[in-house]
Every structure is written in structure tokens, then in C-alpha cells.
Length: 369
Image 1 (cartoon, helix red, strand yellow):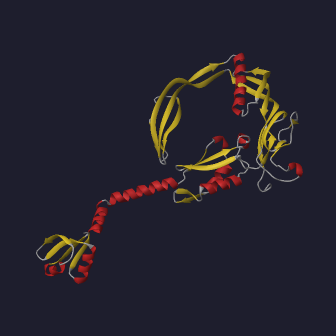
Image 2 (cartoon, rainbow, N blue to C red):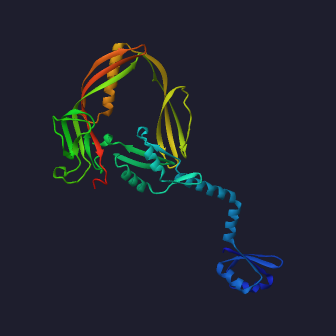
Image 3 (cartoon, one colour):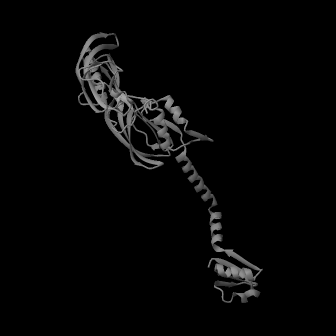
């Protein structure tokens, strides 16, 4: 029974054999509820009749009562959907790989509508385009998180050996002068050999499997080439230096990010280093934990002998940070000159080492199909 009907008392005889309930009599009218079939039949029989669809009446009543709230919810939904699609900035995952050319190229995939920017294509298509255009990078990709685009670039010498699945065609060349000690080849054709002296830029391993037959069949070569290398390194050590070091005091604060905006209590330390951990990651919301490490400026003074050892430790640390194979090692570090002034010690070293000199060099896809 979803219809309210009002008819004249004079027409009450027409109610016979019809499904009606909740009959209420007034002076001149009879009010009752009935189903759709009876309401339709009565409307055909009578001219003076009032029929109200209760479902529609309740719906319109609800909308009228909560109109402002409904409009607000719709606007919030539109805002959330728009926030998930808009792009506010382009960020490079590793700041040292920033490229103005790449930044402008990625920006070309954005279309501006009013104050907002949107992607004009899918991320799959954009990434395919990027890898074809910037073929000389070992890896390049764009991902979206919130309203930011993140550009990830891996340069050739960072992954030339470990990227088993790369299909970028190219060769492996020497990045330094040296005498080859050993070669560990997974893919490619050896051009150089053990014991050979090579110069920077010289081809070591070819990705062209048909190079010895004057043909072309390129792959992505994989190899480590260990060579005996001699480098000269200049290190400057201040006689007195102020370093910002951790004091050992730690405090933890939990908070959240909502639509990319950070909400977390600040540290009580005046000077600190902060480490952020994501505890929960949803689309627009992240629960985070900030770990604050208190730091303090400490003055450190070096004697000449202490500065010499410190300079050697810098060379060792830099070598270890760039080491990718167990066969790489420093053979010796010898000072060849030592000078000083009122502020600094200046050291020059000769460094002999076994080092991987393999560097991947991409070849154009157009030139080598």
C-alpha cells in the first residue's frame, strides 16, 4: 500500500472490491491507502480524486529535509575524487638524478583545467614512452602517489650488472684506465681479455651477439670486469671542525598525513634528525611515526697524524659505498704529498685497487633494431 487517496463521500460506492486500508472519513471526503492497481482504476473512474505516491513523497521529503547535507556530501565526494586525479608536483625519487629535460618531458603529459592539472594518458603508456625516449637510462619510470608524480631514474652504471631483466640494448665499456685482472660475464661477447691494458671508453663486452660475423643482434650485456686501477685522490681535512652528532636522546611522536598534509606533534629537541616510518598507508591517509634523534654541535680538532688517518678513512668509505662485487678491494693507499695552512691539512694519495670498471652504454634502438 504505497498510495494515499482522497475521494468524495459521494463516490464511496466505487471502493467495493478494492484493496484499501486505514480509512479515515472527513466531512466531505474519504481518505485511505491503496495499492497501485486500485489507485490507477479509481483515477480512471473519477475526475475529482487526489492521489499521492507515498514513496515519492517520503523521498522528496527526505531530500528537502537534508538537502544541505546531501549537497555537502556530494561536494566532498567530488573534492575527494578530484584530489585523487589532480597532480600538484613532479618529484624525483633520488634528487641526484634530477633532470630538467625529464622534468619538462613528464610535465608535457599534464593538461591544465582551471587551477588543476591532470594526466592526459595512463601511467602504463607514459612509462612506455619515457623508456623509448630516454633509452640511455638504465631505468626510468613514473608512479603516482596522492597528488604527486614520482620519477625514478637509475643511471647505467648503477644497475649494469644486477638488472637481469633489462631489455635495453648496448655495450659495456671501461669507465677508467686499468689492467684487466678478471672478467665475470653472464651475457655478451668478450672483446677485451685478462691482462690487457684498457683505456677509459674502450669497449670491453659487446651486446651485439653477431659482432664477430659483421651482423647485428643486440642484447643487454651483463658482466663484471675487475681491473687493477691507480687513482690519485686529494683530501682536505679541517684542523678544527664542527660536526652535528647524535647525543643518544630519542623521542617518538605518532601522527598522520591527510591528502598529503602532515599532522604530527613537533619534537621537544632544539636540534634533531627525524626518521619517519609509515605504520598504515591508505589512499588519502597515512598513519606515521616520527623518531626524533637529538643532535648537538661538537667541535673536533685533528693533529696531523689524526687528519692523515681520517683522510684515508674517507677514501675507504667512498670505495665501500661504490663497491658492488666481492672481488673489488683496495690494495694500498699511500700519501705522496702533505701540506697545511692555518685552517686545513691537504693530502694527496696514490690509491691502487682492484675495481669494477664495467659501465653500461646504451645504443639507440633506431640504430640497432
